[in-house]
Image (cartoon, rainbow, N blue to C red):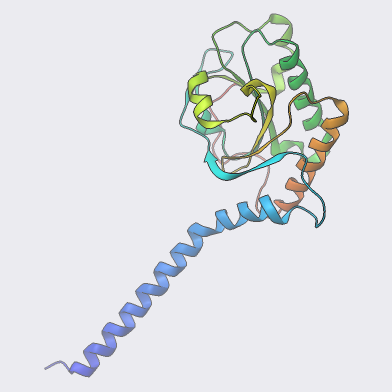
Length: 219
């Protein structure tokens, strides 16, 4: 006959082992979140503020279908795995849009050897054709035409501003984490660069250039 005391001890060992396994699994799942919060908050030197506005609520890339400039199907969610410096505008691309695209390209190039960890992304929010003169400029960009309604459910402009007024930053885990002030110019772009450099430096231990799976978007 089984010894009741032995059975109880065996049950206690199994219960303890199961709890440790559950705790380990929880810690593994928690690790990316801890890294993300480290990036959000610890990166800031004491007494200094980010130029961009941090988004405290996690807002992951939505499962939003679209097409790239070659009319190939893509999905916004597939862009995770890289830092994304992102802008939104209609295909006509007015003066503000052109300025944002220029700043996105220049900011990425200014990062030197770290630039391969950042993609500059233009999300086109309507069906208007892109001017031919812009196509050579966009060769290094990720361009995806997606519904404005879906974008508005994910990105939110500052009070009194439009969605197209800002540049947005998405972390490699796919969370929108920062919104930069509207009407950026060369002077204020230097402050954006400072934020990017801090974030890249703080995440260097866990974020590397390139995606594990190639995004089906508009390179």
